[in-house]
Amino acid sequence: NYNPAPKPDTSAWRWASFTPYELRCRGTGRLVVIPEALDKLQAVRVILGKPMPVLSAWRSPGHNLSVGGATNSYHLQALAWDINTSKLDPEELIRIARFVGFNGIGRYPRQNFVHIDLRESPAEWNG
Image 1 (tube, rainbow, N blue to C red):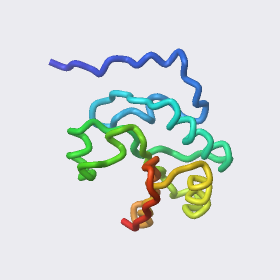
Image 2 (tube, rainbow, N blue to C red):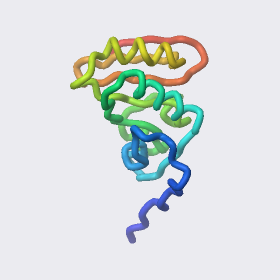
Image 3 (tube, rainbow, N blue to C red):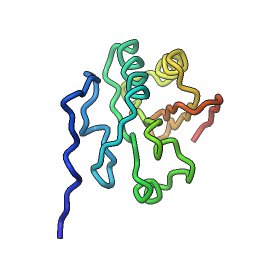
Image 4 (cartoon, helix red, strand yellow):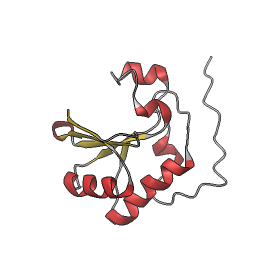
């Protein structure tokens, strides 16, 4: 029995650079949004001035497990995004993300993405 995820109420959607579809969990199709966090993601996009495709946003616990995400991943809290950098300068994206208030920065050059999250204490790593 196929039971699709409930359609989110997007009537108050205010993040012009992103769609609910691209921010949904890739495993369940559910959308979880923390407005203040998405405001910061939108600010990065506005300052960057070009598309920044989201590869991963909020993840359900099951999907996080299936993709090998950390057990304490900020994706589980809707406070992290993986951004495709195949057409972006990753260092420019990182500079802007830091400026806006993102403290978690993960560089994944072989996979062409940068992870940014809103943890409280600064942390950087290379994947």
